[in-house]
Structures are given as structure tokens and as C-alpha cells.
Image (cartoon, rainbow, N blue to C red; front, side, top):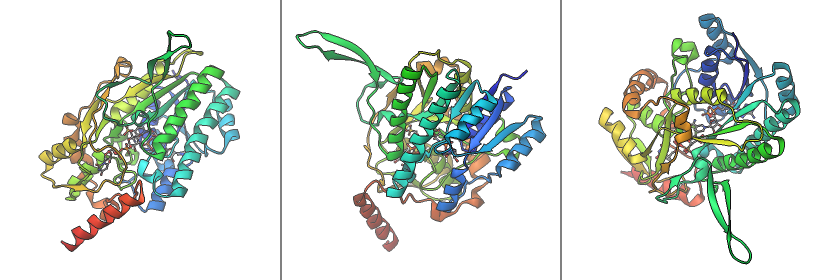
Length: 406
Ligand code: NAD
Ligand code: USQ
């Protein structure tokens, strides 16, 4: 029996594709909506996924052939085609939608003025169009959004970051105090992360004014590639970005180890970040769909992460498994190079998601993905050449010339 329709906005992407398959296998009727902009950006950057990602037509045909299940695909730009979203919601009457449809790479968002503008326009309009369409068609549709741990910033505070909200005490005129619960202060470190902090305000408004049911998953860096569904056949394989813009740190280190490129630690590598495996991501999203907030509730915010690590420790860990070299490169980003990170995630844990730890999952990832597809790596796409400022660019170029001269 069907569990109802779920629309997956951004269902062609790294998180969206395995989530769509997972939901389809779990008994939902899945509709993928994507404008395939990630594929166009791949062409713009000349940097393909390490894994051979098939066309959407081939992906869906393979899924149908292997499981007998059908997934519907609609190519549509959710940042501009409001009428298209409204028509989709009216036709398919989903119980929930999952919103992945944003430009998600911090370095890409910092490449140039044009990339900053594109990222802001795309991400904020996408979220607003989806919210506005839900209001018009059916405010009961639950929206699960993929946000980021980066909305909190990475200051070295020695305090525990709560799940979304925290309590403040404000002084009153004439003495006394009033207690309020507010969104945890936003402190974005890139234009991309800034769009996620603005999303949070849109969600707060729509939950309050229109009583929309919204779950915002503040997710850490996703690593790994495959899930039980994408592993069924090579035609279903998930993407694995390794280039300087879209490759995230742990997947980059795994690929670098596999091809014999030194592990590129930005600065001292004292940056601490939160991580989650893609298998846990898809499980968590299904469970979030299955336990929606009520109409009138505040936005439900979960810190979707399973472990935290310092970047230099990750590099050493990968080195211990592979014997790779480590190189400290000039950090292209403006960020604290030493920070701690303590995160509350009891609501996320309450969803009961089993976690794949680095110790268990890493070796499998090196063996099964990075090694298998190393021949597809383009070495020229490995360095990160998007800089947070001109000063950083100059320092990086000076380091590069020195290395070449040596
Ligand atoms: P991705 O780039 O692989 O996938 C995003 C998908 O959305 C792409 O297929 C793209 O074509 C589509 N898209 C973008 N703009 C669109 C638009 N206007 N209309 C229709 N489709 C559009 O990214 P991902 O890694 O799968 O990330 C998905 C979401 O999860 C993002 O919102 C990201 O911020 C969040 N997230 C990702 C990570 C991570 O490590 N990958 C971590 C935390 C949060
Ligand atoms: N880093 C290196 N070497 C590299 C690449 C990155 O040292 O080769 C460092 C960066 O300087 C940074 C850290 O690793 O300190 C993380 O960088 P990243 O590219 O892995 O992750 P980030 O830019 O934060 O973005 C990714 C996703 C984004 C998501 C975010 C979750 O691309 O969509 O929102 O992770 S979080 O980091 O929790 O905000």
C-alpha cells in the first residue's frame, strides 16, 4: 500500500537522489523535481563527479527495471517557476516535500560577484516559492528542508550549540527581566551559508503566519557515496564531487589518497566540523517525514550530525589508512583556523537513526569508490581556486609559485 506522495525538490543531487530511492523503496510515491542546474554547473566548471552519474532517464528506467517502482520526474526551476510548483502540488497532492533545491557549495558561492548573486537569488527564491505555493495549495503539506550546521558559525566558544533555539533574558524598563526563546544567532561564513540563515527567517515567518509545518535539518558535512539503494546497480550510482568547489573535505581526502595527491589541509587544519554519512542522511529524512510537527508549531530544528572532527585529525586518520602525504595549503577561506565545536543533537538522536562512524565506513569508501573510479579524476580540478578575498588569493598564488620554483 502506498504511503502517499512525497515531492523531492533537488532530487537529482548528491543527497536528493539517494533520498528519492530510499523513500520509493519505503513505499512512498516519489516525484523528483529538479532543473538539473548541478549538471550545468558541472559543465561550467569542467569538473565531473568521480563516479559516472547517468542521465535522469537512465536512472529512473534502471530503478523501475530493478524494483518495479516508478518515480516521476519533472524538470522545473523552483526559484522562478512558481506556477509550475503550484500545479505540481495540486496535481500530486503530496503529504510532504523535501527541499534540497539550492546551490550548496560555499567556494562556488564565493567565486565572483556573479556567483554570489546567483546563489542568493536561487536559494532564497527557491525557498520562498515553495513556501508560498504550499500556502496556496494546502498548508498541511509538511516541508522538510536541508539546512546546515554552518548557520551557527564556527566561533571557538566552549559552549554547546543547541538545536536551533536558545533562551535569552532581556532587561525591562524599570527593572526586571523578560525571558524569550529566539533563533540561535546566525553567523554565516560564506554567501552560501548566509542563504541558509535567511531561509531560517523565511521558515520562522511561514510557520508563524501561515501555520506551515516545517522541519529544518541543520546538517553537517555529508560524506560517503552509496546507500543500499544506489548500490543495487551501477546505473543508480550516487555522485561523488571532488573538485575544489563542490568536493567536501572528507570525500576530497579519500579521493586524494586514492590518486596519490597530497591531502590538502586548509591552513593549520584546526577547523572542527560536524559530519554525517549519506546513509544516515536518507534515514533521518524519512523519519522526519514520518513524524511531522503540528500546524501552529514553531519550526522544528534538528542538528543532523553524528560526529565532529578537526580537519587535521581527519587528514591524519586517512593518512594512517593509506600512507598519503599531507600538505598545509594557504586557506582560501576567511574562517577561524582553530575552533571547537560542541553540538546538542538529542532530537536528531530521538529519530533513532543508526550512525555509520568514520572508523567503520571510511575503509569501505576508499576501497569501493575512490579506488574504483580513480581513473576518472582530473588532477587540474583538485586545487580550490575560489577565494574569500583578494588578499587570500595573493597569498595562495605566492605559495603556489614558491612550490613550483622548489
Ligand atoms: P547538490 O548540488 O548535489 O543537489 C542540489 C540539487 O538541487 C541539484 O540536483 C540541483 O540541480 C538542484 N537545484 C538547485 N537549484 C534548483 C532550482 N532552482 N530548481 C530546481 N532544482 C534546483 O547538493 P547536495 O549535496 O545534494 O545538497 C542538497 C541540500 O542539502 C542543499 O540544500 C545543501 O545545502 C544541503 N546540505 C548538503 C550537505 C553536503 O555535505 N552535501 C551538508 C549539509 C546540507
Ligand atoms: N577544507 C580543507 N581542505 C579541503 C577542503 C576543505 O581543509 O580540501 C576545510 C575547509 O577550509 C573548511 C572545512 O574543511 O574548514 C569544511 O569544508 P567543506 O568544503 O567540506 O564543507 P563546507 O564548505 O562547510 O560545506 C559543506 C557542504 C554544504 C553544507 C556544509 C555543512 O558543501 O552544503 O551546508 O558542508 S557545514 O559545514 O556543517 O556547514
